[in-house]
Length: 384
Image 1 (spheres, rainbow, N blue to C red):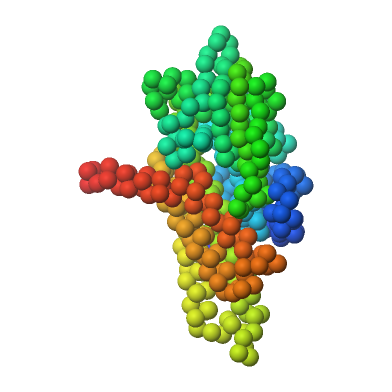
Image 2: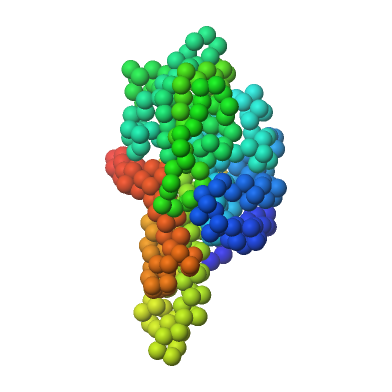
């Protein structure tokens, strides 16, 4: 379908596609096995200015444009969801600064993030605070011109490799969710260390580590917005970042579909290619239709954000939920088309299944997305 992208957006898509085919795809299996952070590929992405797609021009970026970010993320994810999330997770860690940072904070941190010289990460998840983000236990106690952070974050994408972290901590436990605040924490700050690198099922090219704060002393000027705004920062950030997760899922699904269609045309059984069998054609038809439906929803949501829509929580949740559910179904169906070969690591399709699964889990499980959608529908029903 023609989504009427601008010439600039077509150029971004073509550039990301070129990087995906020439740099990402050839390295995907290597990094999936080694679990090394793909700095060489990240450098190419940075040199191509793709990190500037989610940062204002005045700080070295190309302007905050969620559609552009989704275009780049989708194309990179077609080749490898793990390498792509290293890029997309930096956007997640950067959005709180873009949305809520003051001028001093933006001038200090955004130029290096726009150039890709540094990458970012976002820290909210804890061992006892996953879907229930209000249950976080990491604390930030103010002492003069500093805050003292203590606590643990886990399952943090880009953890250990990122230089800039936006972290949610409780400044007043008595206020519950309204007692959370957001902070910028730099790698290398005394008292800020990292746990082991997690051995993951999928997206193995990306780093996932614990963030450990032990009397970590950060300047009070690193507070984002005001005390007590941590969950507003988080929710606004997720509204902007969830279309990116949806685009990652979309790219994984598209990549799997392409591999399945190509394999079906090549694979011979009973004297002809399996693509001539109606059963396979129907599977491919359903897969293609679901991918295109997901794409329509993802880019509709992204464009709404870029147009200045004020409340996109429901639409962002829909895009993330639907695209990731499609990614899981399409990749499993693609593996089925590959048959026994699909189950072998000699073929790339099993990796697509593993990479797809996380998109149903992180940045809010799809059950949480359904909660968001359902609650807003019930709330709005009274206005009709």
